[in-house]
Length: 243
Ligand SMILES: Cc1cc2nc3c(=O)[nH]c(=O)nc-3n(C[C@H](O)[C@H](O)[C@H](O)COP(=O)(O)OP(=O)(O)OC[C@H]3O[C@@H](n4cnc5c(N)ncnc54)[C@H](O)[C@@H]3O)c2cc1C
Image (cartoon, rainbow, N blue to C red; front, side, top):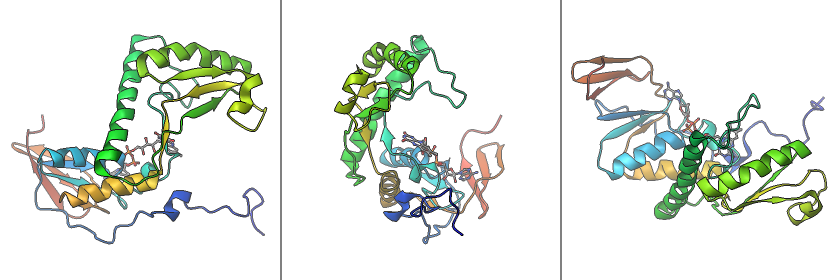
């Protein structure tokens, strides 16, 4: 009998993989040497590789599974520009009026611009759109805590955020379930798997080796070189010596 917890349409694989499924048929060889070894072939590693390649710095991406198979092809695709800064698993939140929060929000705001410019300049087709976002308030207390953040969001991250009281909820959604919420205009949406595929294609097109199934293991340093065990041979990366 099918497990009643799951909807009949439930599939265990990420929905996004229907458009692009991470795989590594190429099994790019781990080179004999590199200047910079980047560990991890998700957004962070591939975006780093792209920037280094643009600057003409030799680099290699080492990925333990298939490039893009980590969180970067499994997430919600929401690009917030800072709205989620301060959230935590424990429920404790960063003091939104602290100088640290302002600095983090400012960086988040910059990141929104960077990602938008990158998608455009590299011509990455990933369903990018400035959709805006609505964050529903679960309780009146939650609504009040959102309202306290609005000024900081708009000052530090230029979020274009405003509160929507409960009686206006249907301007944003076909439900009366929430206690109002927060609208954030400077917020976007993309297809996460197509975005990581786009980064991977651009990195490979610039000649950077992206080596799947090459997990970085022990990293050692000796005068003039780092050495990285990769699971597919050792990779020397000449540079500053380990302390
Ligand atoms: C369910 C979910 C929903 C999310 N929703 C959103 C969202 O809506 N908006 C948003 O902005 N963010 C969201 N995130 C967060 C976002 O997905 C991550 O912040 C982002 O993908 C991190 O990119 P990354 O390159 O650091 O990590 P990853 O994409 O996970 O890449 C890290 C890679 O490193 C590899 N690796 C690990 N160890 C080694 C090793 N020793 N050697 C070689 N390779 C190694 C892993 O295999 C992996 O492929 C969500 C995350 C999850 C899980």
